[in-house]
Image (cartoon, rainbow, N blue to C red):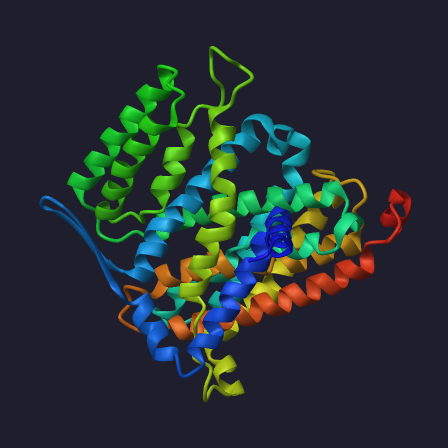
Length: 402
């Protein structure tokens, strides 16, 4: 690889939108493989058994579940770190920045779920997927927003990121409450012991990462065996990572760990997740498949429900004086951002796998079809509206007139 190629690759990886671009490429590659003569090899790859054994403890899963349960725990760990930082010393530390994205996230979860339930009412298996269209993929949404460059006001970026954080919080609560199987008292006891040790480490002011990560690994195994979804271990671990070093107040162990993980998650973990979960065989699929209740409910939930929920709840908050629009953001720009929130790719795929993996009915094709269709429509419509609403000049007064 020549020097110009290396420099071009380095410049690409520095782009804020690189994670979203790689997500798209990974998903597209999976779709191409699944619809090519190599489809059988793709299926064998994601179903390849991988086992880890330590004495009597054995973990055996297909590669797909190692990524969904293991690597995605790292993603949720990063989400937890970002959430803690934002609350302690970020945009969410200022109450003025909290209300509008919180309202948008609430509407963006309730209304899409309502759309899905109305379309799938009466089918107890299909109704397990009610939370699929309630998720927003921040990597894709922010990636598309950043394609508009310097035309995007800072307040709009802050709003979208804050909304996604609240959306992730909602997804964590949903997974914990509604997608938990039979519980193991022994495994939960081990998990509780791990949390106790993490608490003591935090209270004693331990700032080295290694003790937390070692206990976190045990915590992940315990949560995996407990019946609670293993990715929640990542969020729990993040809550105990110290934000400040008592002896050196300017040093933040949490920020260092967040910085170290960010590129790995954005450029490796999430693209791998997209690659193993996006491959659906569309050969022989007609328009009638889109009218099946599951894909129809998901697609309409993401494309119609998300934009209505986010925009209407934000508009009501502003109308009743509970919140105000960010500086430089007009109503059409807010609507375009609400459309981008309908990109539910990563989290929707994740919740979809949880929704139908234990039902005994294979609806994974239907849910992926709806997710991809709804996310693509939301991405395209959101980009076009924002391209129209954001002026080329930096004049904030002109933005407000949009």
